[in-house]
Image 1 (cartoon, rainbow, N blue to C red):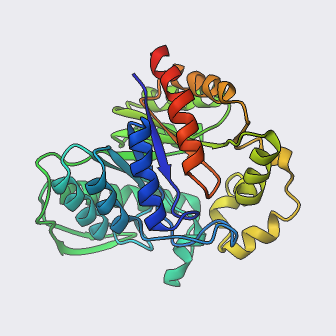
Image 2: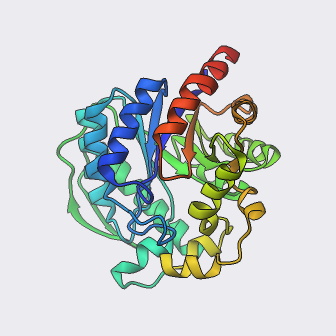
Length: 321
């Protein structure tokens, strides 16, 4: 049965309010949670970007939910630090934590002052980081000289079983590449046929583990309000790769999204005041075989949609199996 989770968007909601929201989501019937991990928001209007790893410890303690995080090791984060963070949360909350690893975005990574590499180099760097993190979580001492450098590192605090390292992908090609190394796959909402091809590519390349989907949505009791929320908060997030990878500041995202229309936003965010329509869309995604679907209401106010989906959407999805 598909688990429906709450996506904690640190770019939009202050961490204390977000902690209360994920507790509220658990009480409303959500069965999982996941977290973004950014230094910069996608827009100055979003206005936040708390440190995910501090928040994850609090959220795991404050709920009984399983949690995941999407992280980009290799530039802003050294892979040894990420291995230590994963090991600590895995040891404190066994079986409840997973980490998805991706190649990142310039808006977060440029702060080191290092050059933002080409996509093929970022892929190669991520692959090195995955091997380093895995070895450290097995208890090995690691030295490595490559696109990242490690000198005699060891992670001493670890869980009995390493948490899953999930591959993050948005293209069919990257999903197939993740199938070579990942313990699961995570992607974002897209046309059903595209998602089906991603799953086939991942499984066809030997990909194992759970399939995760993050779904961007906007709901309000009136359609005009749902549209206004999505346009105000998420119009800077409509650009496909490589734009979303390479633009390096919230201010620049705001400039290039000045003329984005509500209709354009609705191509990447499910915008509807009809809870039944949201239920139908989520059921279609579940039918593809996703094990966990994380719902991200793109507005900053979280309580109202949590209550609505907890009362009207989640029960229908659970009844449908």
